[in-house]
Length: 242
Image (tube, rainbow, N blue to C red):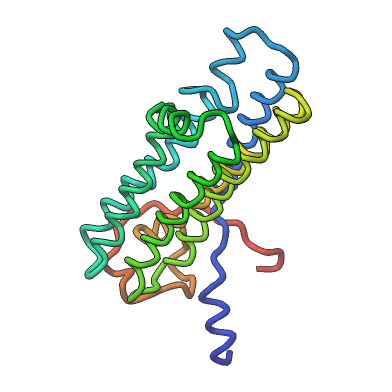
């Protein structure tokens, strides 16, 4: 195996079965909420299973993903030399997203106060905030690239879903009505949920690789000796013939 092949082997990360299961649960919850909305289900049923209502099952599921990532990142910050600031920042950001996603209305009131009901103005305000958060993490990891790509990619994708697709769903609902808006919201919320799964496993790969990867895989780095020692290994999906 030449050096290029070895680098390629180190980059390939098998997808844990747990990640696939969580992704499936996420999309299923969003789909249930979508069906209830377009079918006009009673509020007593539609609200707790809504795609985007505060404290609904779907929103709490996504909030739990980010809360778990925050806890893992905070625990990981204590053991990896020279990485405490980075992982603490990741934990703080993940905790903030979890709080907002669960149903906190501080951000809603803020956006309403400064942008009203204008989706364009809301996009112009929220997009720079999301970009600033990602840029902050990028700056903190400027001297160390370990795990930065996966985490920043997942966060960027989440920002694109929560900000960009939120803008799209607002415009669609205002232009084509509630049914079209519900469809756009389904893609928005599903995007947030799936990127939340990706973010959680990006964090776990950095702070607890033994939990999500087989020990014999070539993705072994010197810093892994300082990561969380979790003895449980989750099954991974393998390609046919391997």
